[in-house]
Amino acid sequence: MDLLQDLAWRGIIYQQTDEEGLKDTISKEKISLYCGVDPTADSMHIGHLLPFLTLRRFQQHGHRPIVLVGGATGLIGDPSGKSEERKLLTLETVQNNVNGIKKQLQSIFEFEGENGAIMVNNYDWAGSMDVVTFLRDIGKHIGVNYMLAKDTIASRLETGISFTEFTYTILQAMDFLHLYQNHNCKLQIGGSDQWGNITSGLELIRKIESEGSKAYGLTIPLVTKADGTKFGKTESGAVWLDPEKTTPYEFYQFWINTADADVVKYLKIFTFLSHEEIEELEKAVQEEPHLRKAQKVLAEELTRLIHGDTALEQAIKISQALFSGDVRSLTAAEIAQGFKDVPAYESANEENLVDLLVAAKISPSKRQAREDISNGAVTVNGEKITDTAYVLQEIDRIEGQFTIIRRGKKKYTLINY
Image (cartoon, rainbow, N blue to C red; front, top):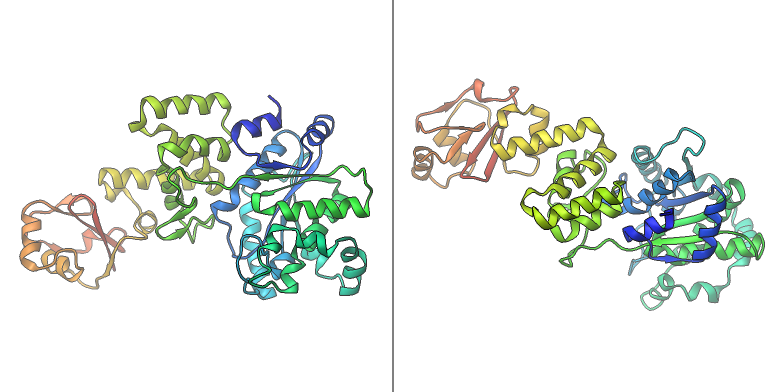
């Protein structure tokens, strides 16, 4: 099975500009290809992953990926998928965002070797271009009627679109032209919402280079969930690649909690497992769904890729400790990860457990707190406490920082010191 057949099997291909032409080109030569991301935040989220993972699949087949961070386009704003103008970011903010995103992309690609990835920033060629040069050398080749026919622009005509965002598609087209001319880049990959921008690039290459220029576009379908809810969102918001925004434990848990109806699809598009390995896991979903083998492999593969082996081991350790109740085995740093979103209470002194349960709003009253303790419903750092006179002391503080109180099976509270 060749690369494009593999992509089709995985459900990754949504649209292609010239299927036979691309197939013929990549069968005869090793090409350069690119995918870009605008630095609208200082971190990517998992919604950005699929196009870049697809780029990595091409790298595994000997092609050279070009990873573009849009320092220039990020200053303009992509109208794709937006019903109103984006808020313009400052140059300083965009540069800070560029630096954060570059670090994350470095974990996905190989930058050494014969087909090592290249990372570029379009601000390097667009930022210094004066407006007259832009209008004469670039804008002259893109017709207004052609741009108005683009869905991303046409959809905004009633609500309004500034000239700034109107020209976004030309800036991205200029990226493709620049990479075609300077890096022999023949393919752009993007999400399905980028089709209009990609074809603008091909139009510009055709106009400036020649009618017979070999350049192609490929888009990837929007990732959806079987239940119709939005992929990549949790109750606390987006799942970020930055460990400060979404901890490796939270990241791991997101994938562990994938529904059976979605997990095989996600294994196909997000992991580099072989067809045979995925088919074996699909069989496990059908025959032993309670074991959640596929979800565990999915979570391990993605957490290792984005955060590394050490963070993966830590995420698994936290998960096992919370499942078993053995929270004493966790370090303070691991507790900070695993209990990031549980209710917390600040305590400065040694406190009677009954008083603490009421003060931290774990139990509604002292009478209920005594009942909870007497009935064995309260644990301190995983150990059941049945003495209503128990006083929490220094020994109950994990690394002097935390005590974990659990009432019932699932109600955790983190006591901070």
